[in-house]
Length: 575
Image: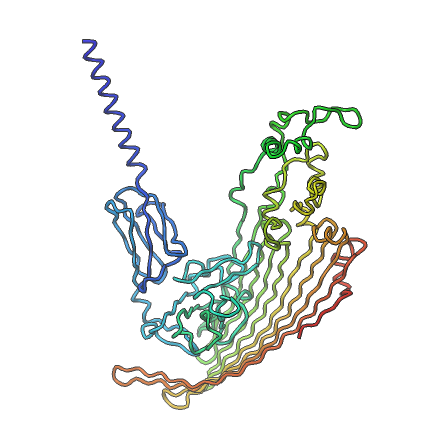
C-alpha cells in the first residue's frame, strides 16, 4: 500500500511539473518580427503596433521594422495617421508584413503644392500631409521635432541633445554636391532658411514633396525634397480669444550603472600595478599619519563622486500661446503670441523662444483680394552642449569616464573643483580627463537670434478660371553668439590657463517677388491646371567676428564684458 501511494505521488509530481512548464511557455508567448509599409511599399516610420486589448505595443523604426513579444494567437492593431487601421491575427506566425492603405476620406482634401493648391486625389507625385491637430499637442523647441513618426519615409534626427539645438529632416538622402541633406523650406509661399522660429500652435498644415515630380518646379533648390508650411489664417465670425498652455517635467529616467570606488581602484590595479599607489598605501603620509586607504578593501562601501548626478538635473519646460481670431466675409484676421521655455537637463543649458504673428486677409471686391502676414521671433540658446568635441573630449564621454574617487592625493570635493584631473596631468595625458561640472560652469555660450518677416500678396481673378497673383516677402535675421572661456575650462587651460572670449554677429537679409498667371478649367472628365510663373530673389549676408585673448581675470568675460560691447584684438569681416 505504501509503495503504490509513493508511485502515484511521483507521477503526480511529473504531471504537475509538465503543467507548470506548459503554463510558463504559454505566458512567455512568442517574439513577432514584422515590417509596416505604405501603399507604395515604403516604410512607415513610427507606425504604431499594439496588441489588441492590451497596453503592449511598439513603434516601427526607420525601416518600418518592429519586434514585439506577444501571446501565440494574439491580434495586432497597426495604425498610422492618414491610413486605415488594420488588425492582423497572428495565428502562430512570427514574421509578418503589413501594408496599410490611405484613408479615402482624406483624398478630397486640398493640399498645398508648388506655387498653388490641388486636391489630394488629383496628385500623381509623392506628397505627404500633416494637419495642425497632429502636431499641436507636442511640446518641442522646433516644428520639425513634432513631425517625428508622422510622415512615411522621412527621417528626423536631433542635431544635439541640448535644448533648442534643432533637427535635421532627411527626405531623399543626400542630393547635393556638398553632402547636405536638408530640404527646401517654404512657409506661406516663401523660402526660409529654417523653421525653428515657428510655433506649433501657428501651423495650419505641412506638406512634404518627396519625389522629383512633385518638387521639380523649385529646380535645383529642391534636390533634397521640399517642406511646405501653411500658417493659420482668420475665419469669419465672432472674435475669439484662446489660450493654450502646458508644463512638462523632465529628468533622466535611468542613469548608467558605473563603477564604484572599490571596483574602479581594483580595475586600475589590474591594468597596471603602479596605479595602485595612487589610491592606497600601507604607509604613513609626510606628516606621519597613516593614509586613509591602506588597502584595496578600505574602499568597500565608500561613496564616490556621482558625475551623472552632478551634471544632469531634473527640470521643467513651459509652452504658452494666446491667439485672437475673427472677422467678416470680407475681412479676416488672426494674431498670436507664443512663449516657449526649456531648461536643459544638462547643467547650465536652456532655450527660450518668443514668437508673434499677425495675418490679415482682405477681400477688396469680387475679383481682387489681398493678404498680409507679419512674423517676429526671438530665440536664446545657452549651454556648453554635449557634442562640441568629438571622441574622448565629448562631454558625455567625460561624464562617463571621470574617476569616482580622488584617491590618496585629494578628496572627492577637491576632485569636483579641479578643472583638469591632476592625476592625468601627472602621467602626461594632458587634457585626457576634463571635469564636466567645471566645464559647464566655466563656459558662457549664448546664441541669440532675432527675425522679422513680412509677406504680402494680391490675387486678381481676371476672368473665370484665369487668375493673376503677385506676392513679395522681406526677411531679416540678426544673430549673435557670445562665448567666453573662464579659468576652469579646458579651453582656458589650453591657452596657458588664461581666459579668452569670442563674439560673432551676423545679419541675413533676403527678399523675393513672385508673379504667377494660372488657368484652371474642367472639360468633361478632364481637369486642366496651367501656370506661368516668374520669380526673382535676393540675399545678402554679413558676419563680424571678434576675439580677445589672455584676459587677466574672469570678470571681463562675464555679462559686464558684453554690456560694454568690448571686442577684440582680431576682427574678421566676411562679406
